[in-house]
Image 1: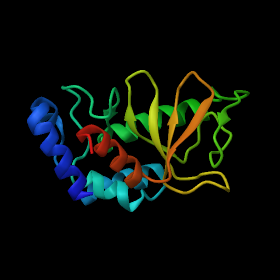
Image 2: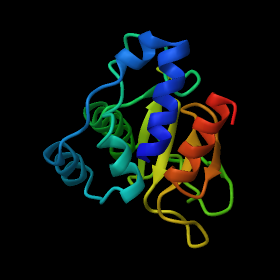
Image 3: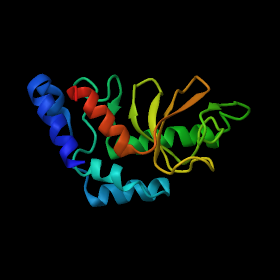
Image 4: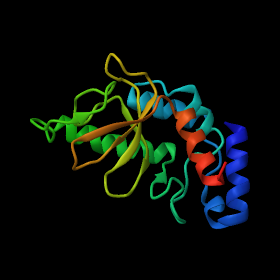
Length: 170
């Protein structure tokens, strides 16, 4: 993870220093524990390693993930709570999702942890409670108003590696 971040930081330093400056310092162990306790799930080691380098971004520059803000541990919890409140209030009752193999057929799951947001309710999420044929920690894309739930990567490390290689042209 450190090597990938170094490559990305070098790219940002040369081509988008404002975005580089927008990245937060590392998340502390206490911040990560607080997030895990609040959601009641342990985060995958690859994602924790990422947060320990940069705890998201401040959101004052362009968004890191091609139109999606890289959420801090605090913002992850805020977004997750919004979805959980809607779920608990029955907002998704009767709504059918169309999912890729390995993803639960739900509009929203408590096991989905958003790590990015486009500001309009759409997210890339860690799927920490996948369907039987899925893999814990897989990356999925969720749109707030569309039924599609798509599998993007088998884990965060692979997803992030693909993002960085695409960004630096490698």
